[in-house]
Image (tube, rainbow, N blue to C red; front, side):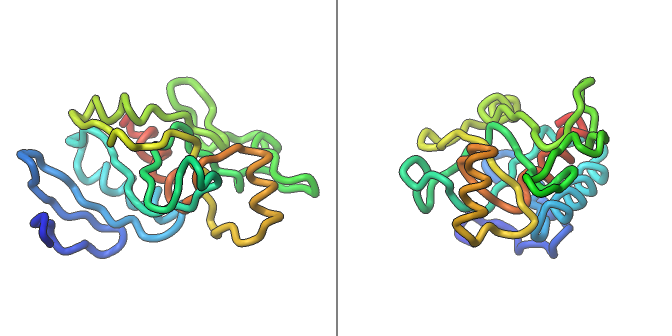
Length: 178
């Protein structure tokens, strides 16, 4: 690679990389929220507390092409997971089964995890790109491919973007205190 990056590891595995005077752990999570949560959790566990944080990079779709056109950098301010909970005729009720996915800092986490991307970057000695667009990121297990589903998700969650790994990666990191 022109950046001197190592060859990508197999999905679910990580490899070390020294760049810009820093040590990085490059992880390919695999596709989907379950694969992301498992891979990030494994990487955090294997480093035994040596990580300063997690930077999740990947591709996503945009719910607002004016604000976040193709190629934009999205800085996720809330990881949303619309598929967790009790599914009925009127959608999914995240609290309908009464079991949170996690409890972090005394707060139940159902289908939303608030994030501070600028603060997290600063805590790692990094900065977000000036052109980054902040907004909520929706995580789905299957890519939205119909106008009706897009309209329902937009109405219920007001997301900026949609991807398949964000909530899983964020929840694993938050559960580890990162």
